[in-house]
Image (cartoon, rainbow, N blue to C red):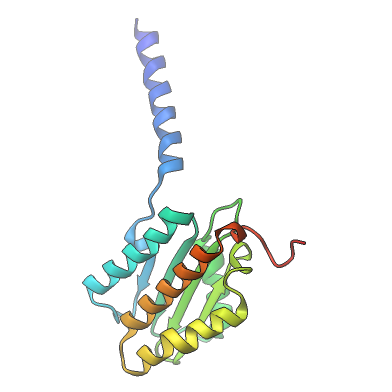
Length: 171
């Protein structure tokens, strides 16, 4: 009787662990990193909801990192290292995207995973920065800039879901 009970308990724990792995919802602190404290809590929550809606609809994972300084690194080095550390995107699709803003240096960078680079090309990423983010940022509206960018990214993914997971290197 005890062996059966423990066997069932172990089976239930393994089953629960497997379900948790496939149904994991990223937490707020895995999506928005604002050590510069530029966003109000309700603004950060709104951005989180917008980002998670993309993840729920398509699976692609986005994150925003706002720091005072990149501490002696270039914005490119910092954003690439941060993207690698966060491991955004699903393994099979490599469909992560990271937006980094270093407020002290007035520098920003968007890192696009291979699995989104046919949708969010360098040209589109640059246009999103220039047309959605920078006008808001110049007015001190960091929330508005990030929200506009996330919405535009959502639009581009929604228009091209068949390209998720397709790299520019794929033929």
